[in-house]
Image: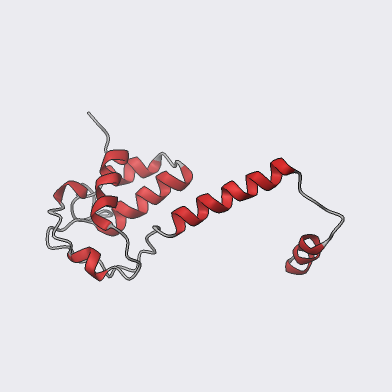
Length: 124
């Protein structure tokens, strides 16, 4: 399959239309934007003193931002309410910054936690 893909990619006869090239560029730009801030779930940010389940909050934010996966909201709202999702949601964050100091990717975790709650919390 790799050989076939390489042959297709280097084939001068097959070309993309301008619209297809623009679409590929948009996908590439979106991927680049998201990949710089995607949590790899390494866990270095945890444990949190306030018991915020950082990994799960960021994981569900990714599922929402990238895939618009509805279950992301359900899973985020199960944090602290199910043994599968221990700890607390993003509202327990006191913005101490310890998690950000430990993050090898330099993710602005405090900002991302706020974003996760804003996007994923089910308003009753």
